[in-house]
Amino acid sequence: MIFVMRKGATEEEIQGVVRFLEEHGLRAHLSRGVELTIIGAIGDEQVLEPLPLQALPGVERVMPVMKPYRLANRLTRPEGTVVRVGRDTTRTTEIGGPELVLIAGPCAVEGRELLRSIARSVERAGAGVLRGGAFKPRTSPYSFQGLGEEALRMLREVGDELRLPVVTEVRTVHQVEPVARYADMFQVGARNMQNYDLLLEVGRARKPVLLKRGFAARIEELLMAAEYVMSQGNHQVVLCERGIRSFEPATRFTLDLSAVPVLKRETHLPVIVDPSHAAGKAHLVPALALAAVAAGADGVMIEVHCQPEAALCDGEQALLPTTLGRLAADLAAIRRLVNEADYLRPPS
Ligand code: PEP
Ligand code: MN
Image (tube, rainbow, N blue to C red; front, side):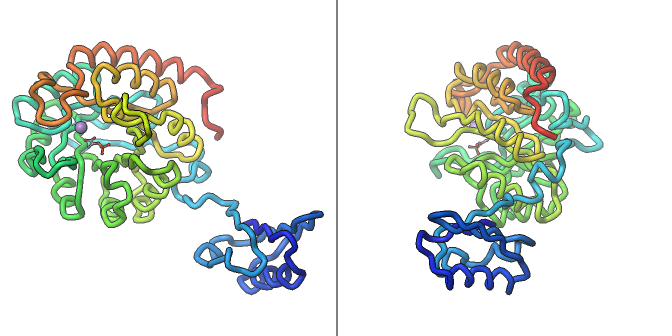
């Protein structure tokens, strides 16, 4: 922790900070400049965190040296984390390894046959995880809310048929148990990124978590949300950039691709990108997906529908299965280039 004293802070105030640090078991390192005095706290910074340091007389600013996310910090696992998704009835898909992971499927599970045909097509395209919403977080309470537990059963059935692990959103603490029973990975949606009770509950479950960035959340807040999950012992967290709100209406959200290399440097957790919700329009999705892989994403999550114009949810951003197939091949090609470019690798 670094304390910057106010210009003209008195010797009494400076010594007050020194005494305060010593009382908390730390040492003070003074650096007296012509205009300002800076005091470095040496020792365990953690004990200072809950204290109102800025309120100490004569203190202008207090700056932490350590990052507030400890478990998610890249330093704790410089080699990176590989998250494994699957169960004994499916293959195991590794997210964060050398291979790019494609997560694909409909926005919402609308029915068994439709899910089956979409799932077959995404499996053919090389998807490693099938997605599909059972509990949909809709802006309007009058919109289709998802088929609930019935959808979970369909996901499981179709996932098992194709040996594909499945991911689905969990919206409330009460849904954690049923979702854990049927799905292989929890999705915590953008609107729930700071639902701390939910984060703690999925942290207590022993299933991987796909944590989406809130559309008004900073990168550090996303990392702190991951920290909540990890604080409960569940370290299998995958982060997802899905666009943030900006003043630009041409896309549904503004895809913050710079978050990808920033996150890769800051954390050992895998990072994926959802270009579908960011774009909001199908024709924009392929370009954003290719760019996401070039930016270093470990995977992409893409919404697919056989008949987008008839979809009950997010049809305007759904890719047709044929487009997904062609895109998937190009995504893999970009991934190979990224893997070879050692100047892109985060420091280890
Ligand atoms: C989704 O992926 O189904 C979804 C609702 O996304 P988000 O939480 O990012 O809006
Ligand atoms: Mn959707």
